[in-house]
Length: 298
Picture 1: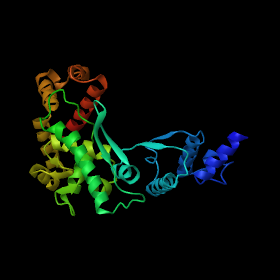
Picture 2 (picture 1 turned 90 degrees about the vertical axis):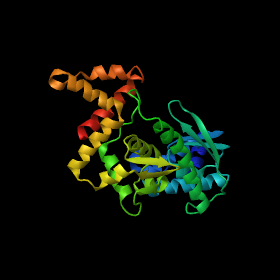
Picture 3 (picture 1 turned 180 degrees about the horizontal axis):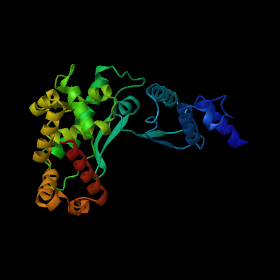
Picture 4 (picture 1 turned 60 degrees about the vertical axis):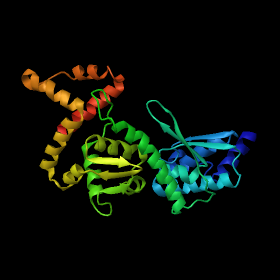
């Protein structure tokens, strides 16, 4: 009886009263996420842990759930002391959280701690809100992109798998109005409906290839990037191939080996083993896949 009462109370708390006997197939994505909240709250936890709780939802549903969750929290209606959210959405973090920890990868560690000084409810259009979002982008780009590119690539450098279509799309978007070659990263991420983890690798690869640069939270086209944006398909392929061989040592290495071999063929494992002197097996495979895909475009 007690369990039933607690379950009904949790269902009522998250706004699903009337759906107590509904089957999962009868619930929308947003409703199912609310059920997830109720299942977590019914055991009276001290802390609520959420890993990308809104990422699988459409924009409007996600926004409604964020607001409802914040209302429950600020009104003291949730029986918990703290909420820990893992998110790649910087604006979401600033909108919801009182303290933000920025993590690096390879190895994972805390690289920044930011206190959010705004009271709830928060206004996304407030200049101070926008400035904090920009500042966090700047911290992340300085660490994740700036440091990764300032020394240039080496033969054993890890490379993310980014499609040439995404690279060309970002270059074209930057070249057009209203950006005219330079854009604030939070702004262009929103306009392209990209999360941080989607935008950073594209910008990083373009910086490696000499088509773009990233500084203080802004991404802008270099002179070659502007030229690339004006070129047609065949000219772009030739230019991309030239930059790939010039800036990515692994690509130049592969071409050299193939040119020296009869039939211009070499086993894939030959390059994987060379990369494994510097990278893990998975990272070596991912890096080789990326360079092969880029080579096919150029």
